[in-house]
Amino acid sequence: MTELQIPPEADEREAMELVDELVDIGDIVDVESYAMTGEERIEVTGEITGSRDPDSEPAYLELDGQPVGEGSVPYEKIERVIRREER
Image (cartoon, rainbow, N blue to C red; front, side, top):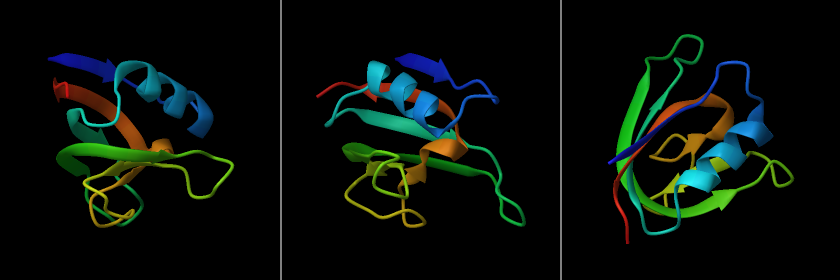
């Protein structure tokens, strides 16, 4: 298991680059995210199936082929990523 803590001051692109250095498509990860205004803290587990960069809004880490709000997490909200399994 490998863990990455994203610094709170990291912007969307910095968070994406840090996550991309740790994981690859096919890895199984746990993702914890900062609570969004009026929402609860998000904790999800899934297989990385893609990544959307900031040039194609919204930028997010795609898990299990799901869109944001249904399993995938915006890079700007990621607090910690734990790689459980490598493909």
